[in-house]
Structure formats: structure tokens, C-alpha cells
Image (cartoon, rainbow, N blue to C red; front, side, top):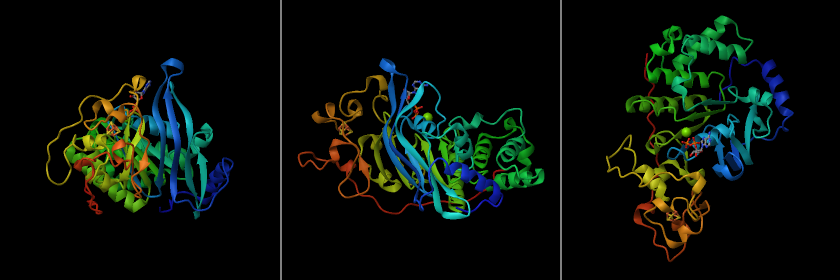
Length: 388
Ligand SMILES: Nc1ncnc2c1ncn2[C@@H]1O[C@H](COP(=O)(O)OP(=O)(O)O)[C@@H](O)[C@H]1O
Ligand code: SF4
Ligand SMILES: [Mg+2]
């Protein structure tokens, strides 16, 4: 990750000292984020539903983690809760989330921050500077009565107090350029911009303080296919240039293959499959992942028949006994109706799946469409275009 030239040593050292009170600095850590056995519930008592169920994941520095799953699978709840933006009746009911932030001037040392127990003051220091979030409703997130330039000035004024007005303007222009927009957009109101331009502005704002982790919740869902593809290409370019780690959430798995290094698939609040992006897309192991792949046209490559997934996502208040996907699964066996499969590594690979088809039971025949092999390569198209 490149150093932020605008960050003064004095202010960042001060912040690091405050953060050190949370946890002692540790040796260099390859993971920017570690989530362990994380549970999130809505409501209490009899009305309680578990929207995030025992999620464990790790994100390496500068890596892109894709999170996929149908609407209602718990993707937004996971990232809202992880970053402590979750509102009542949502409550974190177990597990921990550690953000390993780098200390300025010493890229080999990190300070682990426990996000579950961090105070509001500590969270304010971390958000935007170290972790920034583009929320699901981002297209409407810009204040309609403010010119775009004001949004940039407010962020920089709050978090980079040392900057003069002209330095703030220069940084705003630089940020717009990063996302392929001309500086004249700073004088525009949100309604004068297209959806794609507004989304680019949200991405530029998220990158304003050079964070080490960026989280984007369905940032392209409301956009047309061409604009979606352009933004994915730009994100590829930006992350290779600036080195931030990215969690990219979408219900469209075909988008993730263009962007993600690793993908986790969620169903009923749990991770049901985890693998390298091309492995997962070309050679899915879980029937639900296969169904998701067959629900969206691929961005590149041959067309194929879109078959979708029968039925609808489960009611979290009435999850079936056994595998939660069983009522919709064309491969369900007797065992699936009574015993819930755990998320386990497949053989000696580092990919994992929660499905009784893949536990090595010799009496189970794995269908050919769930036992394909994958090619190791992944094509990235990284062309920055002008979208003024
Ligand atoms: N405010 C809420 N109150 C109660 N349940 C909620 C609330 N928000 C979300 N949920 C439950 O959490 C589940 C996951 O929602 P969400 O995280 O928004 O899924 P996704 O982002 O994958 O579409 C939903 O199916 C719903 O049952
Ligand atoms: S465990 Fe059984 S029901 Fe669940 S996804 Fe696998 S085969 Fe289908
Ligand atoms: Mg969501």
C-alpha cells in the first residue's frame, strides 16, 4: 500500500498512540481482517433470528474477497455488524473481528483492533482512515442539496485538518481523476450526474483517506451492465495501484470472477462454500453455488442456459432441520434432512464446502457438474476510461 502523502506524521502518530491503548502492536501480519465464529441476531427471545451464523474468514492485505448469495442471505448484516454500523434490533451475539491496521512509517508493524469491543471514539478514528464502506444504498447517499465538491471537502476537512482549502481542492480533483471523472463534476449536484458517475464519486470518497480495507455492498447492482463492467475494471486498476484490500458484496457471482481473488458464498447466514475465484466459478462444489452461477449470464465467455435456483430463500425463523438448503436442493439425500453439514476443507485442498456430497463418503456419488476441475488462470481487464 502506498503511503498517503497528505497524512502528517504528527497526526497519524497521535492516532496510533490512542489506538495502541486498544491492543499492543504485533509483528507484521499478513491479514488485514480476521473474523472468527461471528454471530449476529435480530431480536431477542422467541422472536430472535440468527442472520449471521458462525462466520469465520480472513482477508489478506491487498486481496479482494467476494461475498455472494441471494437477497436475505446475510451479506449486508455481516459487514454492517463487522464494522459496528449495525442498528437495533440487530445485535452481535458471538465471535470476534480483528482489523490489523498498519502503523505509519513502519509498514512491518500492525496494531490489531478488536472491532467488536472498540469504543465509538476508537471506531471514529478507524472508519474512513483505515476501513471505508460503500453501503448498499450508495446511489442515493450523496446529499441532494450539496454540490459534489462539498462532500469531498467535508471528508478531508474532518479527517485531514492540516490541509488548506486549496490542498483539499487538489486532492478532490486527484480523487475524481482516479475514478475517471473530470474535475468539473465537483461543481455539480448529484441529480445532474448519471448513476454510474454518482457511484464513481462514492468510490472516490471511500478511497479519499487511502484506507487499507474498503468494503462495498452491492455497489453496482442498480447500474446497467455496461457501467457495471466499467466500474469493475476500474476497481481492478485502483486496487492494483493503491493496494487496498476489498470486500465486494454482490448477489451476481459472474461479477466476482472479474474482480475477486477469493469468494465466499452465503446461505441462510452461513458460509457454505469458500474457494479461489476461478476455482469456485469454474468448478463449484456446493449445489447452491452451482445454482447461483446458473442464475446470471457470464460477463465473458460462452453463453449458457440460465436455470436459476428453484424455490426461495428460507425463512430464518423456520430453518429446516439438517442442511438449510435441502428443501431446494436437487441432490438432497436422507442424511441431509436431519444432519447439518459443517464447512470443511475438501480433501487436502484449501477450499471448503458445507455439503454431504463432499465428505469423502464412498457410498455417495458426486454428480459430474459438482466435481469438475478448474484452470488456474484468471483474466483481468484493467482499462481506465474517461467517464466525464
Ligand atoms: N431490521 C431487521 N429486523 C429483523 N430481521 C432483519 C432485519 N434486517 C435483516 N433481517 C434479516 O436478516 C436476513 C439477512 O438480511 P441481509 O443481511 O440484509 O441480507 P442480504 O444483504 O444478503 O440481502 C434477512 O433475511 C432478514 O431475515
Ligand atoms: S448437504 Fe445435501 S441438501 Fe445440502 S447442499 Fe449438500 S446435497 Fe444438497
Ligand atoms: Mg444486502
